Amino acid sequence: MTNNYPTFPLSRPRRLRQSPALRSMVRETALSAHDFIYPLFVQHGTEVRLPIPSMPGQYRLSIDQLAGEAKEIADLGIPAVLLFGIPAEKDPVGLENFAANGIVQQAIRAIKEAAPELLVVTDVCLCEYTDHGHCGLLDDAGNVLNDETLEVLGNTAVSHARAGADIVAPSGMMDGMVGAIRHALDEAGYKQLPVMSYAVKYASAFYGPFRDAADGAPKFGDRKTHQMDPANAREALREAAIDVAEGADFLMVKPALAYLDVINRLRAAYPELPLAAYNVSGEYSMIKAAAAAGWLDEQGAVLETLLGIKRAGADLIITYHAKDAAGWLSNQ
Ligand code: PBG
Image 1 (cartoon, rainbow, N blue to C red):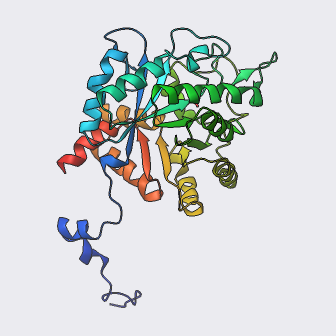
Image 2 (image 1 turned 135 degrees about the vertical axis):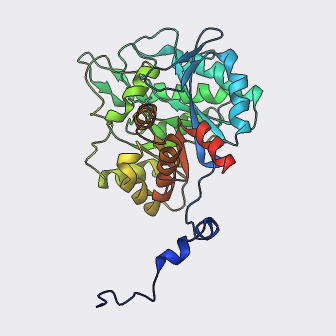
Image 3 (image 1 turned 30 degrees about the vertical axis):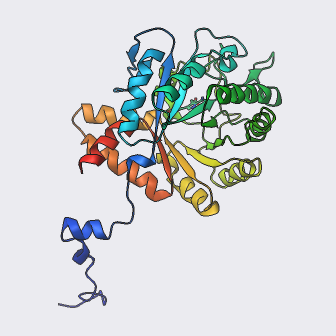
């Protein structure tokens, strides 16, 4: 037999794969409940636990449901939740977004009371609150106004801070949003409140189920004038650099799976900053649908997906699988 592979038989990578103990010893990446941030959808009403049809296993919850939910999440070892609110009424500005007793403000207080150690991150954007469903104020022609929107984002972040939020996460991809929010928070006395910027957010088809869940689909047009073109990765570095210069404390890439290269590039470019990746609704629903049809093993597919996002370079993963994955990991 001729040997065309001169490293063989000296090198046998299979030596290190022989037993669970050996594989575990040389494992490069470890996933834990500590890595997760769990998104929650909150709405008005009482005793509401409304299943979201496009996201099996996820619900819209009323405030009275949050104490139990928060304790369950904290008990699983998940350090944080990310809040999205569905307002009672929508209008062109999205007034409930920064109302002292708005749905998210109420939710923050309820969660912090029930589980003070659970970190509350809030999504700061206009799209769930505006009647037109866009992420900013509009001009008469229906264009998203950038600079005029920044003031609303600042007011919203401050009202979340007043209600007790631990971290604010602007997701609207307006230019200058991190700086405007940082300035507004500092002025209001919240100099210590961190900003987690959705710095690199793509105009993605994978947000589809979320827009059902949060009732935040644009009534006309799309988000391509502010969210990034999926074809661009160098531009992601530019977006990140701007947000870092404006004072972002965390960076985020969203979605995760079609953008693992972008996560990897940001990890390399900003080794000193915590990096989050958002495993978005469409990524969740694809696995849930395939598992329900019997085409995929859900636990295996979910843990492999989350591990891949972490291996690519994310420190934190925002994921609807968080509770299930935390449970599975604790049984391993
Ligand atoms: C906007 C926002 C969106 C998501 C998070 N924040 C929707 C959008 O940009 O259209 C999507 C999250 C997901 O799909 O899981 N506030």
